[in-house]
Length: 260
Length: 267
Image 1 (cartoon, one colour):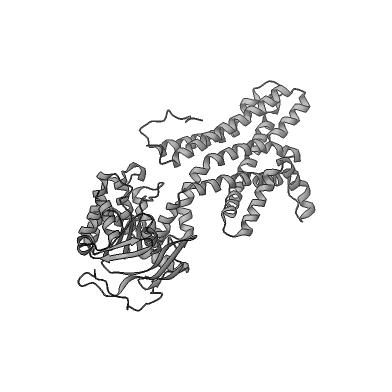
Image 2: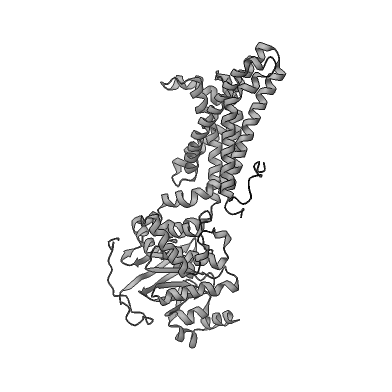
């Protein structure tokens, strides 16, 4: 998607326009979630009376997505390091993890964490936490591939230059390789994040009261699937649109080379 | 500063190219170096020494092993056998030794390898701030002075892609100098440049040589070798075929291979 805030003054630096775009989109997301109940309450039956529930459901969806998304980045980084490791067992573990997660349905993974994990480990997780773990593990496997590709895309000469200046391997990664590979990986990471937001609707299967769950409840109570599902879809659409705006601005901010 | 990790004796043969007044102890000693890439024997039993303040120019056809040899001197390539000692530190698999050597040895690459996501100033200050723990303000000040020296004061806040190749290579030289190395290695520093930019880089290198910097330069710029070098080293098939002061080397090359090479370069 193209820059939505192209109306910002051209005289501003690219960084400044991007930062403002990010701020506006973030603020928009907060206001949207905060005030969502008000426009919904103006709607006719069956949406109006359930406005507060829709707003709470949307908030829960965002919470699921943000929590799983952040954990998923960490898991993705670890799995990418594993795949690129010179130590064979680390590679095997990372490859096995990615193979299993990408080769099985997300619904199975969510059920597994919620129903099967308590039988295997002495833990009892809430439905929300189970969903966060399953979603984070899932998106982490896809993130790993994106991050790995980003790291491999950085030219070998960059490492050579950094190392020959005396930077340690860790400093080389943090200051030279990671910023460049993150820029390469960002579009894929954002795609994964948008998918995650949509996939979080599967958490309804274990009883998490997020947007889809609310939609199901209202639909079955009102027998009016059309307005209810359209409302849910529109809320998802607004959230994913805001997210792509934020990521687009982030990309432009970091993309030093293609913009003057 | 690092303590010398491994002192060596100074019995290595003296170079014909010693500058008057230079110390007799070699700064860099390479003894019987061998290197294979798979089945190819790319460096064959090479031994030589480099002295404080010396400017050595390494020439030879591509594939002769000259770049590989240069890259061994800060262990961007490993050697299979033999010994490399730099400023008293032996280069081996020990990471501490490698890091200690790399802090003393600057490297300039054919493809510049500037960090594209950092400004010119940050390219120059990154290593001093991270490795030498220089405070940002002091590092910036030192970097500004170095960038002025290479004629780039007007460009400190630009990104590498906004500069010409010659300007980028001069930034790369300033970036290496910011670590105050004892030796500077140049790996074909002008080979990726348009002809009109070669001079500005060579001029910076000449200034550096005049300031007394120890330099080892792999290049095809024979004019630079003639004018600046104390010693010319000719690589052929992974061996040093000849090393001599430039007058002797260019004046009456006895070896037919060298004559043929110089003839091709001249054309």
